Amino acid sequence: MRQGFLNGALFQVAALIVAVIVVHMAYVAVIRPNAEIVEQQQEYLQQTDEDYTPERSVYVVLKDFEQETCIILFLWATAIIGLKARQTLNDRKLLDRNLLQVPEGTSILPQDARNFARPVQALAEAERKSLLPRALIAGLHRFQSTQSIQDVSTTVKDVCESEADRMETELAIVRYIAWAIPSIGFIGTVRGIGDALGQAYEAVEGDISGVTASLGVAFNSTFVALVLSIIIMFCLHQLQLAQERLVLDAQRYADKRLLRHLVAPD
Image (cartoon, rainbow, N blue to C red):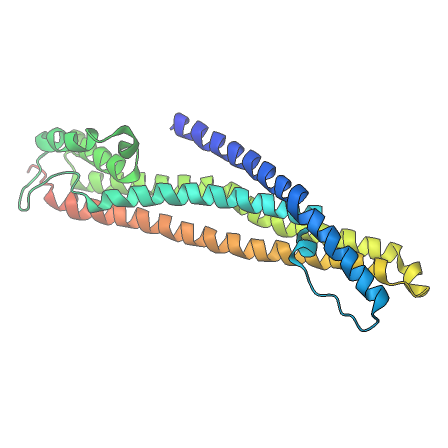
């Protein structure tokens, strides 16, 4: 478990570093240069044509530092969600396999528990650490020691519930990112409005270009942040739904493939 924690932490750090490098390179090489060109063209056309209406450009919408930060956090959260989704899908594949290899109509006595646990223990290490194998092994060991079917059911349930709590805890960083992105967008909004108020005297004199640009920063940062936050929350809820289904299906698997075959001695 400790090794899994370290691997997860290293993946998160590496994903953040990669996101920062990739996004910043894209901003330096593509987004900000193109945004500057578009703004210069629009300023020229406004000065030469009074009826010209500037069109919204993706480069201009994304050019500010708040949007860059939001995109970095978005990619970071997406990478974490992708890793958790992959782990969940790998765990679900075990539900389609007959791990215990118990023939139909066969009863499992306490003294037989060790033999039926061996096929599960023989799985590859990565598979053996998954939820279903751990629940089955724990249930069989409990049955061997207590000879109580009720204790087996309780043990399987406890393993599944602890796994559900663990998966929920590991998503805390994603929930924090989903909260942080709109907050960063709001910071851009406050900065843009503050700059616009600082240039109010220019608007009074008839030059509203500075105020318009500052308000554009405010609205663009909020727009980008809210869109990214909506996408992250959707992906997060889908992942949580898949994880909850995995836990419930693992309990059903244990009921169908293990508990109904157990026979306690009189």
